[in-house]
Length: 465
Image (cartoon, rainbow, N blue to C red; front, side, top):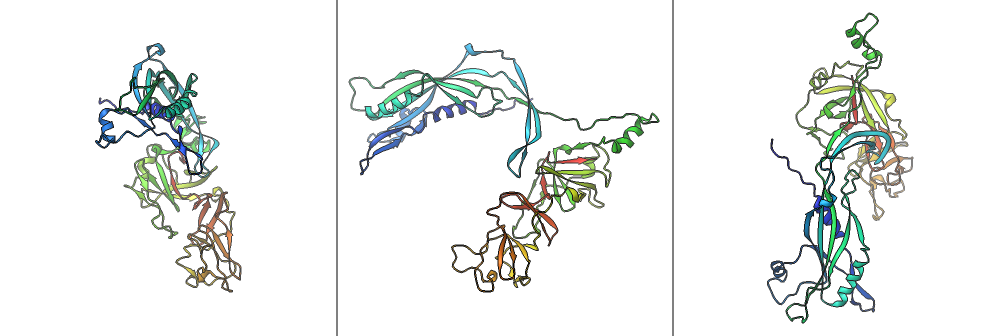
């Protein structure tokens, strides 16, 4: 079997955290015209400056000095820490249960989400030794940086390479172990004007092997009665499956689905769904990219579909939209979906006549003449507060301009148009019917989307047979 490649940037993350600990130090760099002290942020770079690098930075010229002040960090040694060695073959198991995440509100709910078992091996201990060089052109610069750095390490400074609490090697500390005041000796020659002070730090780290993550299953079916009254096990299981609630609820093969109108299509794990091509076209539905999948071949692996009895349950926010399903009479790649109207969210906004682009149509120009009670959901703004002259088609009888934002609902009151739903101020969830298509829409706080039609990923829907 071929060896599997693994790289998790573990050492790199510790080095990055180490470098961040020395970022944003400043020095006094003279005074401005008003006599105020000017502060200069000292840049920090990774790597020690070799002769070749220094020559490149100098543009191959001996007349150009290296920029100072500057801080450079680099690895000195990385040694195996035998004194911190623990049982190398130790294996720990952790059962993790996640809270369910609501995509509409962006918050975690009180319901249980996915559950996992994580098996992690004992990490390997190492001692990382880092050097920090302080490049200065005079003693004042050196003293300023030295004083700011030294007070941080009394004797250590804690760092964390990741916020994953399952990573038991993410915490470490930086310990100052040695200092070198200057790299120059007395007498100082005339060739080099840059003074380099060096700090040596010890960072004990752990390097972890890949963890094994297993997704926990749940009990999907409990058979409460095996035999019927006559002692038949076959009839007892087949006939009582529907009556006694012994029905299978599952997401087949962890596939997703696309719900459009009264039809459901399978979305396999490597397939995607296109977005709306033109947002100005309200009936432009998304489409699946990839070859169609056969519903019968999929469902037959689990049991028989019972038309009018088997269900598809869709997770929408904190509730479910439920409907019965049946095979399409001519297309095996689609299921016919009959939604239970009692499970559809209740409309709390008066329906609109149509969804329009007010830059393309207007009353009397693609739309009926304005009458009292007409309501439209607009996809583009009407007018602007910075415009002196707005669109004449939306002015009232007195010629007053009308201004509304995208996603607003506007209504005609007999004298002019007014904003019935201000999308810029409404943050809560609302539901509304588009009378032109009969489709229910939901305001999620930032956009109008179909309330239950659309794409559902694995875990967000169930097939009950």
